[in-house]
Length: 396
Image (spheres, rainbow, N blue to C red):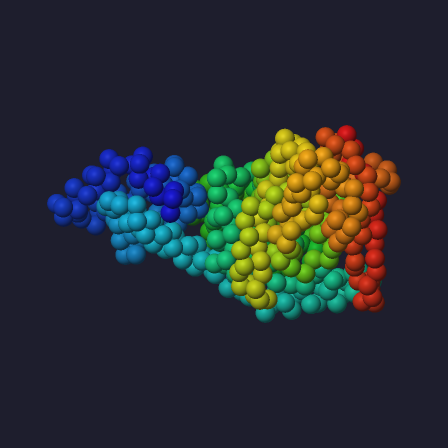
């Protein structure tokens, strides 16, 4: 809505011309012509993504009444409230068109089938002795994830790479393709049957959707384990992990890789935020998903300067939103930020380099030095709780 105000400022002449034509009695053909210009203007000013522009053009060429009416309202609006309302109507209609396209991709791969495929894979892996506690299948709600994608990419230039860590049948990957500007979309799924289903969806996408996009991206789908060193997603601009059922060890592994993202890159998680001093939670909201309510967190990778400032001020713990809680005594130099081991209890050591264990490719050279230990509780294969302790060292 706020972005609509920017468009209004740069396209005042076009809007005035549209108003004049309205007074003269504009024809449908003229309306279509003006709407095509409008779609290009909104895209050029980064108020619509490339896929959204294509959906709007498709609606306009079909002379969709809702889209034409919303576009006319936007061009003829004279107040901020009118512009915001018209822009909301227009983007809502675009989202409906994206949803219809998305549903067409997955008409043969619904949630029931996905659960069946996942269950077969999990049963096979259990027989092979694989720990499958993080392999619980769930799918994103289209409307909720569409909103999350728009929030996650707000203010960002065109993305280079999007990653989905645990991509299932490809729903989040292909929704992102239909919503945001990005050159390469990557999905990584460990369960082979789900991966095969995603590849089938990809074939449908190539036949039905790719020809509609003015700048079709590259889509890569892989069958593998994101923690096995086989994949390095630290070059991602936007990363997504449907992490509601992820075990603590997996979350810790993800957090450590996330620390190697470029400054300004963002990572989305569900239900739990990643605990790392290199990440700042910039968005938090609860949505309903296929398995029930889930809180969505969007983290942003800090720059070295931002990280150094965070250490300079000091911290005692992470709050419920995984934001850093600053202590005035720490900030004034009364004690070091890691002097109290209990303050780290239950927090994943994602920002720390283990003091033993050889070279660590995820190591950062931090502007401060500190050592300590931390504990976290996990369940073993028999469901019994065990306390894990890991020493860490931050190196200047």
